[in-house]
Image (cartoon, rainbow, N blue to C red):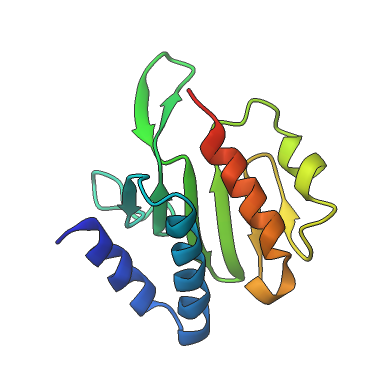
Length: 141
């Protein structure tokens, strides 16, 4: 099964309203960066243990751990959770950047060092979320 099929299957498995919003957000991200590689994680580790929510990944970023090992991950991630949707922006050096730059204008969202979490797209300023995502794509390793 190709990655887009896995993404479609994941979105289809969500409750209807949340699935529609994740599909809308997915379409917006792909339209804004049509050549970025897509990834999908079902949230399971190598032993098939669930370690996170399923996540749609966009772009590429190298994660380097304290022990010196590294792995390739997504630059931007979208994940549905029990209370809403999370958008992850990886690779930020300044952990206060998202909150300082977008927190005051994004709407009803919790903004942390690398995550923008909200209940529904109707609660946020979509153009501000798109700005944050574009910024994330502009980062290089």
